[in-house]
Amino acid sequence: MTEPTIIFFGPDGGGERHNKVFIRTLLYSTSDKGQYIQNMFIRLSRGESVQSFNVWIYDDKSLVRGSGLFISKMGIACNHHFLLPNEQTDYPFLAGEYLLEIFIETFESKAHQIFEQSLKLTREQSEEMRLKEAGIYFDWAPNTQTYFSHVDVRSKDEKGMSDLMKVLAGDQK
Image 1: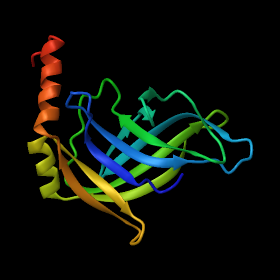
Image 2 (image 1 turned 30 degrees about the horizontal axis):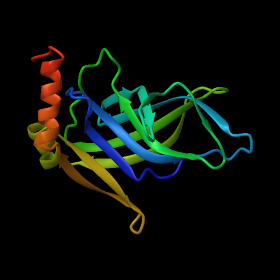
Image 3 (image 1 turned 120 degrees about the vertical axis):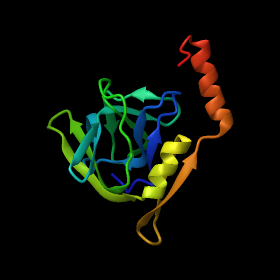
Image 4 (image 1 turned 60 degrees about the vertical axis):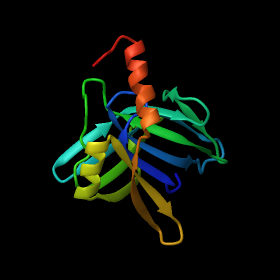
């Protein structure tokens, strides 16, 4: 796996207030025959708190629930969305040092870690995310070999469309 160019913590774009972790990366195999990935998940730790985001969805053009992906030597670059398990309704991104770990489960082996990265979320960023229903992007800067973060607020049009979709669906919460 290459260094993710983007790591995102924040609300899922599906109109709900469920938080997710998103990455953009190239997965590749060093084997001539390639590798089958059966599943992927993220473990996010902050202090004593540990949360798995084990619902894997990936895309390049349209979203697909992760249930197997063949990776050749040439690799595949795509977006990976990691959601909370269904019984977990929310995960607040509080200020602190996070350890992001990415795991894959191949057809032939149990889950093993393929990447880890420490990321910092300041109190100001956490508060802005909470108040504005925003997310935080960590953008990889190859020239400095580090991630730079910035909070991204959903546009009013996007939020308005999300609220309209809820009303049309009969969910007027």
